[in-house]
Image (tube, helix red, strand yellow):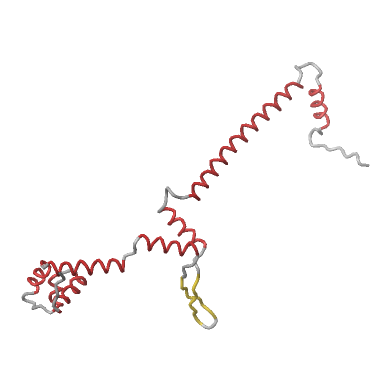
Length: 192
């Protein structure tokens, strides 16, 4: 059963919510300065007045404090570019108000904020991690392949080399190359 409050009690409830002080609320509601403290305490002890205060506080909280769903919806409007920000822009005629969509930076920040709230359920992040792991594995394979190719090339080169003092094909080639390189920076120009 809902209890009917007097006008003074309703004002007390309003003022208590405003000030958070029973004596001050009683004074503002019109109670005598001599009895304001006592009446404030007495009013707070009445279950129907306490319930009215709690109900009003919940309504204020619901109206003023953003809930998780509201925050997620806002981040989504920023991410999708549907949110608007009014900015003042100087023009030749003075100042003009312009509604701008979110910048790429703002949209990226909103996306990061949304992703933070779904750490285990992010398909994009999982796909990126899978690609990074695949790239690392490919790089490792390329390094192993390059090392194997280098080992093969070195083995082939060693097969053409002959011991010191013997004429081998590779040694002759290297000697010919060494002889053709000018010594001391002199370059002979035979274009006459």
